[in-house]
Length: 274
Ligand SMILES: NC(=O)c1ccc[n+]([C@@H]2O[C@H](COP(=O)([O-])OP(=O)(O)OC[C@H]3O[C@@H](n4cnc5c(N)ncnc54)[C@H](OP(=O)(O)O)[C@@H]3O)[C@@H](O)[C@H]2O)c1
Picture (cartoon, rainbow, N blue to C red):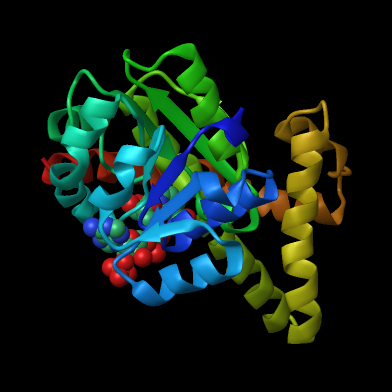
């Protein structure tokens, strides 16, 4: 289906370019892809390398597209809305926004309640097409448009639907910010191993592969995380010794309060941008 529609990415930065990369990898014809940026060098590179349509002016390309995906920083979304909202309404384009903290309520305020809008919350691993994205559609989005939104984000990883802005705040705290939690865990694990005397080069190879391997098992196994954990924890063994320490230090409580703080912050940011 993606090969039949015209898609415009507004803001070809980190996320925008990873989505463009996903679309190329999924065989969307370059002639159907449009990208905008304030940075002419980025656009020249994209045009030269992938032969897509590029523009520095959003208004030059939006009218030609069935789907317009906003990938600018949150503080720039209101300005983009002012530029393109009439065109979105006139052409009944599907509007997608990946801007963190910009709620559906705000998008409907800055564009129109009558527009078909999908809010997306991807995460950084979208850069390597291993993203985790949640989508939330307003009532104007029809089934075909839902399918299109799903497939666009599926090009950079896993996709799930949620039903409210409130859930999006929790998604932001879970998978949006989640890679940073695992980077912190990696830092701590690597530093601990080095402190205990392991060669840093060895720790640098083993740490990411451990996180990747455990993630792959968790994703592909029929067992849940608790079962997998129990399966690798022999009574009285090394893993049990470490897990006892985590439990004694209230690891689950720490994670709960950290994720709650992130969800609260997501709510506050949306409020500040009103
Ligand atoms: N990166 C991620 O993994 C990720 C994950 C989840 C959500 N997001 C969301 O995705 C959005 C983009 O994040 P990012 O990390 O990709 O930021 P980024 O690298 O700064 O990309 C934004 C791009 O938009 C361009 N831009 C700014 N104003 C514009 C305008 N009026 N019209 C067209 N282009 C414009 C910027 O150009 P200049 O640099 O020249 O200003 C920049 O190239 C953010 O809202 C963020 O919350 C990102």
